[in-house]
Image (cartoon, rainbow, N blue to C red; front, top):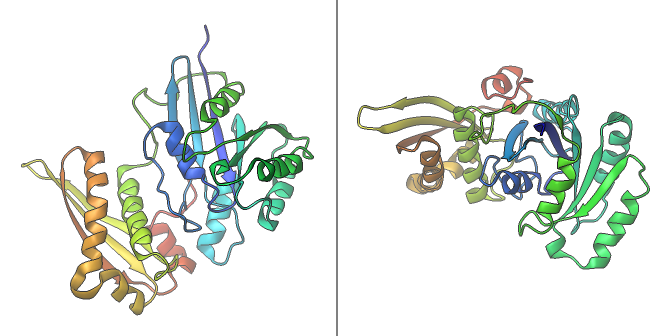
Length: 298
């Protein structure tokens, strides 16, 4: 029996649950999750290997209007990911319905997908009534290029096996692209920086806008099996720097305490995590800063 494999890009408006779904499919956390828009900034691959087939999911930034160079980069990442894939997984939020941004995305995809099969997943069905889901389904059924529509809940696991079975049908005969035990293609430095950024977003909530970036300055394994991870959080204003550090360094300590266990899981060692905070005004519009923080096209 031939081996099946393929790439599936997950695309949708911000906060529809793309990263939550990919983590659910993979079976462990490979993409950070937050209810803040623009949490995902890069294309992140999640590898699902089963008996007889391998799916590589590409989690992309939420599609929305670009307000700076970082936003432009994120849009490019999302739409460039439509190239050379076996299927597109379009996600919508059942609790939000079809919004203007979703209509705009549907219009763009109708032009860009060409012959690539599109599966639509209506997520967060655990939060709504049946009628709300059907209203979205009826709208999607008007698009002939959408091949399948599946109501799901990435949070609870509802219909995830059904969705995977449908997507498997679009895989083609091919190689196992990644080793059986590999779950993501992202370098460990990026995974560390993303974990720290996630904890910062979670702990600071609405106090700090999206103007934070995290750079990993160094990683070194000591002879005593402790890994030193040195990181810098960049923000755009001095007032934000004070909030990230907190009174007497309390908030920065919370961020480090929250991030350390997940980073230790990647290294399988104890981790000495040291984090600094620096101000870099308007870094999201600086080509050099974006490049240094890893926001450059692959």
